[in-house]
Image (cartoon, rainbow, N blue to C red; front, side):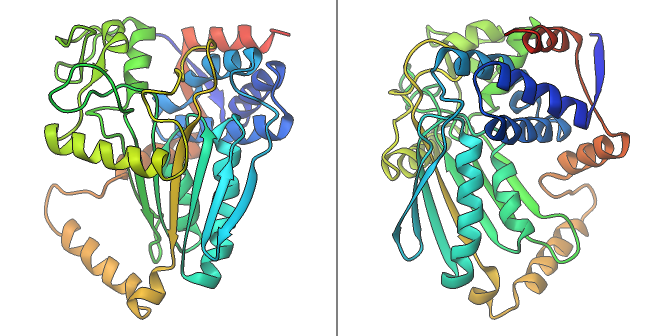
Length: 337
């Protein structure tokens, strides 16, 4: 498959210009573009530039309000309620991260619920910002229906990603980022666009039959990781991200991929924790002791090691590499008025 190399700044500018041309404010476009290129550099292509065509179409149709400015209500000493106002999720999450960092300095632990939101991309991106500031971060998000209840055949829950990040003494934060389906749905979307098959065991078609056809999988349901136990975790995240925040459930939300319909209106729930106050300032030492015990064993690695290696490679070269077909599509969108 042929590919095109873009400079990091070039990729961000391209993404920003596409969004601005499709009825998005400069500030929101910059925020979204930065997150998409960061995902691309991390090798998370399902949350990277491949999202731009659907983002642009939704902003142009009004399904996403590209000019929305999130509103914040402090509902308790350590609790925020954030309305993304049916805009892109990234500006709302950026506000949440900033405000939680300030609150946690006073309270030691704080949380934010975001409603009327949208696809929030690479979940670890948001909590990593908290960890860079010395905090532990957790985020839970729901998404349009893609997973059936265990034993069922019709989608009720989204793939419901979760992420966890902790600061390290002299290394990049440890970030654990995973979808609760066996694989993120964005990877199936990329395969469908490329006409490529997906591995057996990722998804079922609309009739509940196992499939390796990415298009059929997009019309069907994803399988949860861990089978019945994974389905229980999916339910937990649905409650935290939607019931707790007042957002729409996965079975109520419209698609992240199409320009038609109402805004998805999904939710995210973030928690920030000052690790030192709970540990008596021993957290960093204890964490490194644990990590040392893991890495002493041959064949082990920490979660996110591949992502950090790809990020370093991309930063060193100053580029991201995308498929030619996607590049051509983005160039066409950048010329659209």
